Amino acid sequence: MILCIETATPVCSVALCESDRIVSIRESHENKSHASLLTVFILDILKEKGISASQLEAVAVSKGPGSYTGLRIGVSTAKGIAYGSGIPLIAIETTMSMFQGMKHMAELKGDISGETLFCPMIDARRMEVFNCIFDAGGKMTKPVSAEVIDEESFTDIPDNVRIIFAGDGSSKCRNILKRGNFIFYDDFVISAGFMAAPASVSFKYGKFEDVAYFEPFYLKDFITSKPRNSILG
Image (cartoon, rainbow, N blue to C red; front, side, top):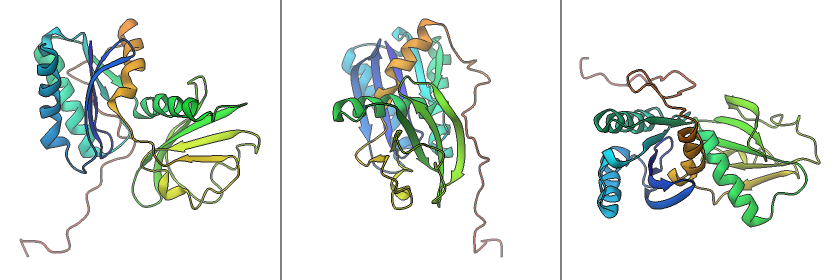
């Protein structure tokens, strides 16, 4: 079984997966809950199944892009488990994980007909989002980038091609992107469970990370804001 950790957005999610099947899952949508809940969720799942971390086949973590703080917490926790238990570390790009969930939702809704594209969007503050585009087969047709969305965004997508947007960055783009072939999944929520299939493939082919040197995929440099008032005067 593979322990999957998702902390790239405000959602704190942990899933225990076997092949592409979710065995157990714990999630919180409360903002800034990663530090307080992540290890609690992990211990809870392991206790529920009566196993130790060393009995896992691997630990998988969402590597970004996304929240700087969330990624640091998730990756450092995953690295600690991998190193301490002597199991492989798997890193899954956050947008790939989101695509898995988006496609499953589209299949349930019957939204896949003809050529359909998927655009995961992660909030990057103001009108900027981390995004990319996948085709229905999971091939990335537009690489991950940080973009400021405006009325001209995605105008290269033909009118006969349906494109589905989802993620915590998509809601702020709904009132700007108004073409008829644009579909928004407002009820989509990222989950560690979406990592099950790609993590299983990575494990099968031995695509592991170096625990000592692996770092999250931030995409953008972390910039701190300057405080208005300094306690030093």
